[in-house]
Length: 205
Image 1 (spheres, one colour):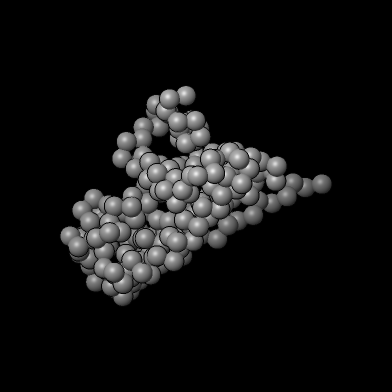
Image 2 (cartoon, rainbow, N blue to C red):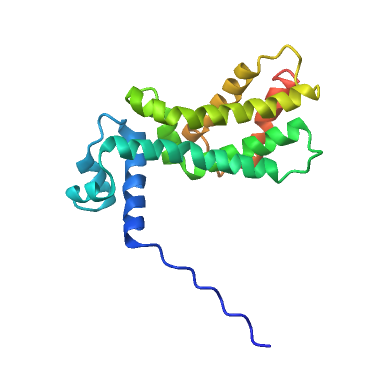
């Protein structure tokens, strides 16, 4: 029997490639110098295209911002859901949280320009852009509240714990790892376990 032929994947369309270059360049610049200080000319220069060509793909800098902010949280959200869904139904709350933290951390660092831009500049961008991104941020926060509530219902988290504060503490700590993480020293899985050790056992254990 002849060996099956390898399936040829279609090459990305040139316009899609250029669009991604614009978004990559924008995310990097937003991360480095903020939204207000970044110009479309700088974005075009970083993406290695003509300045006027940006308008072929995006109507404005605000539209680019919306897409960067959305990608910055969407890719992380999808990775976390996938990691948790892959666990058996019998998985403990702690196991689910460790998987979620590891996936969040790994994806956060993989898409560091997008995720860091989302973290750094969200409070500085126009309120209209914040509002357009707020729905997915709220949904992601609710997802983490659900993970924490599951652990709390099983007695793995104290009954008096304020889960909103726990979530802010945990994700705040994990998110800022983009500023100091060194893959040569620790793996993301190792850090995820350490974050959860602090969460469940405290620093005095």
